[in-house]
Image 1 (spheres, protein in one colour):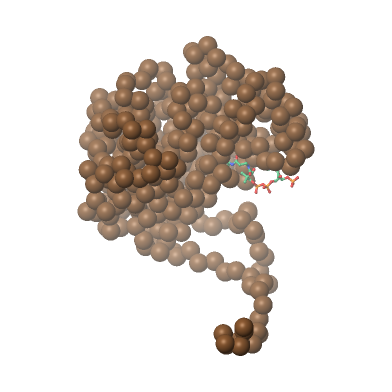
Image 2 (tube, rainbow, N blue to C red):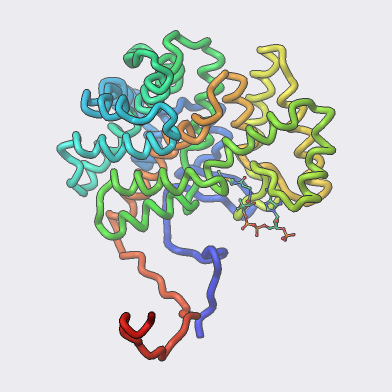
Length: 373
Ligand code: ACO
């Protein structure tokens, strides 16, 4: 009988040339260390790298970026549908609906050719950020803010969210987190997207499924739950006792642990550094101090390391972004990774259809309804 691996732990489910966590813990996108990319490249440049498989030349990034900037506006029907959602809709659910609706307005939605999928991936990347900002403003009874073609992806998102141009440093910090979130090989949401793509369904459907998977608190939803933890702790002096009590009650501390990283999530170092810089700029190190103490106690008590969500969450909070937008922000970056995987899957497809080991009943005798009482 073949071995069952719950959660597919340790199973190699396919090959990819997009991204890898190397045995020593280094995270690479298309061969480049994520630290180098986050520190030295812009979000659009890294998105190009992941989608096209090579770093762009000056002319290539200009054409790609111009395309993103000119595709940011949502079709009016999508704005109308967002406006009809309940004002208390969960932003991740609203984003899932927005992507599903966007498909209805894309004439190439059903074209699974390599080039059409690249064009759709760029449109989705451009529009998901607009959808997140627009739905948030509509839910607050505010006017939707038009994209600003003079701003890059990160700065434009903050502009559309708040209705004013952001501080340059703040936009750069957001950009760094978007690079860190952009791709992470066969995680749950990407695997979901690849399974959907393997049936030769379409990119939009795969991204809708991926958004649903990302929402869960064991995956991307942890960046909202981690912030709840940090806010509940409130003060650095309360952190140690809070963690000890949580562990005593066998509660999971969100933002800690990872299926792949057992000693360190390679993205944490970069997120911690930029969060610290933002805190210093705002003259408020309270959240960083809480995080540092929680990290120390979690290592001491459980030998568990923080994951990237634990350090991006306070960054977004310092930017005064509502906690419920943390996971949609993750999604509006990860859509690049999802799209690259969908394209890679379709270009070299084999339907995902694993086996299961049946552990239910057999040989039961059927009793017609009228005899079952
Ligand atoms: N808090 C407390 N204990 C934990 C945590 C945590 N966050 N994570 C794992 N553990 C403990 C488990 O209780 C278990 O302990 P035990 O052996 O004493 O029973 C042990 O560590 C192993 O846990 P598993 O659930 O088997 O580890 P797995 O690899 O399946 O889990 C997961 C990974 C789901 C991410 C887990 O660490 C977790 O639930 N973390 C909190 C949610 C989170 O932060 N998710 C974000 C992941 S990163 C991302 O998606 C971007």
